[in-house]
Image (cartoon, each protein chain N blue to C red):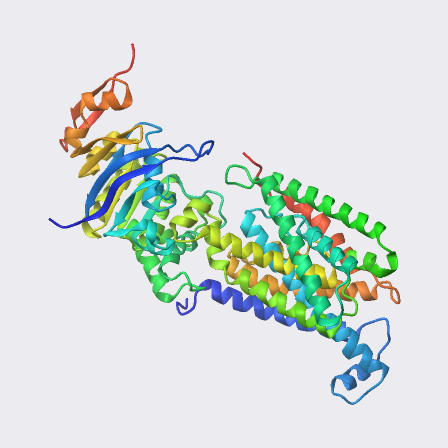
Length: 267
Length: 342
C-alpha cells in the first residue's frame, strides 16, 4: 500500500473566545487520505468542517496535533510551499471583482513563483491547460461578474488546478449549483481524480453527492470524527441519526448502488 | 496575438511610455514658465551652460529642483494612495483621507519646535519624526476601524477623518504655543508648498521616496491576490501579515517623506490611481508603477498652474489638488457605487 498523501494526527483547534466567523472547534481528529483517493467530509452545521479546510490549507495553525501533506508538516512550511501542495476551491468565488476569468486563473500561479512580477509564458500555458480541463477556456476573456454560478465554480476550480497541487480541497462545491451543474461537477471531479491523479478532499452538506463520489467518508460531529469508512458504512440510519439528531431513511441509488438519504418530514 | 509577453506587461509598458511623454512635456512647460520672466532662449542658454547670473539661479536653483520635487512628491503620494487602497480594499483610502498625512505633519511640527540642527541632519530628523507620526496615525485609524478581522469601508473613512482632525488640532495648539517666527512659513507649508527645496533635503527626499516605492511596487502582485480576501490570498500562498506590514510601512514612508519636504498635499493619492484604474483596469502591477509616473506628472501640472495663474503671487499646490480632489471624491462616493458595509 502506498503511503498516505494527507495525515492528520490528533488535530485540535479552538477559536479565541469571542472570535467570529461561523467556524467551530475541532478536537482530537485523526485520519489519513491515500494518494488518488476522493475523500468526503460530511457532518451537520457547526461540526468543524470549515475549520478542517482552514487547517488543511494552513490558514489556521492547529492548537494540537499536526497536518502532514506528503510527510511534511504544513505548519513548518512557508505559505507558498503549502499552496503548491494544497489548492482550495472556496464555496463561492468572488462576485464583484473587476477581473477577467483568465486574470483570476493566473492568480493560481502565484505560489509557483512568488518572486516573479509578471506571469511567464509557462504560467500562461498552465493556466490555459487548467481552463481547458474544466471547460472554461472559451470564457477566458469574460468578466467574472457575467458568469453563472456553475461557470464561476468551474473558474475557481481552474484557478486551483493552475496551482498544480497534489491535494484539491473543495468546500461545499454544490452549495450554489442547480441540478444540472451538480451533475456536471460530479463528472468533472471524478475525471480529475481518475485522469489527473489528483487527491480530492470534498467537504459537503450534500450526503447523496458525497456518497456517490467519494471512496471514503469522514462524518464529523461536534468537532470530532464520528465515523470514517466507505460510504456504505457511514451513510447508515443509526449513525446519521446520532450525528444530525433527526430520523432519516437510507436507500440505494437505483443506478449506482451507492447509499442515498431520504429525509423523514413531519406530517 | 503574441504570447511572448504577458498582457499586463504590455499594458504597463504602453502606459509608462505615454505617461513619460506627458511628464516630459509638462516638465518642459514648468521649466519655461514662471513669474520671473526668463525668455525661452535664455532658458535654453542656461541649460546648455552658456548663461550665468540671475537667469541661471532661476532656472537651475529654483525651477529645476522644484520640478524634481513635484515629480517625486506626486509619484510618492499616488503610490501611497494605491497602496492604502489595496491594503484596506477601500477605493477611497489615501494618505490625507486616512489621517496619515496629518499624523506626519504633527511629527514635522514637533521636530521644528524642538529644532534639529541644519542641513542633512535636519532633513533626516524631520523625516524621521514625520514617519513616526504617520505610523502612529495609521495604526490608530486601523485600531479604531478594525472589526472582526475586516475594515468596514465607511468606518475606516470616519476613523481617518477623526484622527486627521485630532492631529490638525494638535498642530494648531503647538503653533499657538510656540513663537511664530521659529515656524516661519509653516502656514504655507501646511497647505502644501513645493517652494525652494535645499539640495540636502531633495537628496533625502529622493532616497526615502525610492525606498518607499520599492516597498510598495514590489508587492503589486500579492496585492492583487489580497483583493480576493485574506483567507483566499493565504490559500494561494500569500503571507498576508507580512504583505500588509510591508505595504503599510512603504505607504507611510512615502506619505511622511512628502509631508516632511513639501507639506501635506491631499487627494493626489485618490485621483491618480483611480483614473489609471478607469483606463487600464484593476491590475496593481500596472496601476501602481503607472501611478508613480502619473502622480508625478499630475502634481507637476498642478504646481505649474499654482505658480502661474496668480503670478507674481503663488497659490499653494495643495489648494489646486484639493479643488480637483474633493469633487472627485464625491463622484467616487456616489457614482462608482462604493460598497456599503453589510
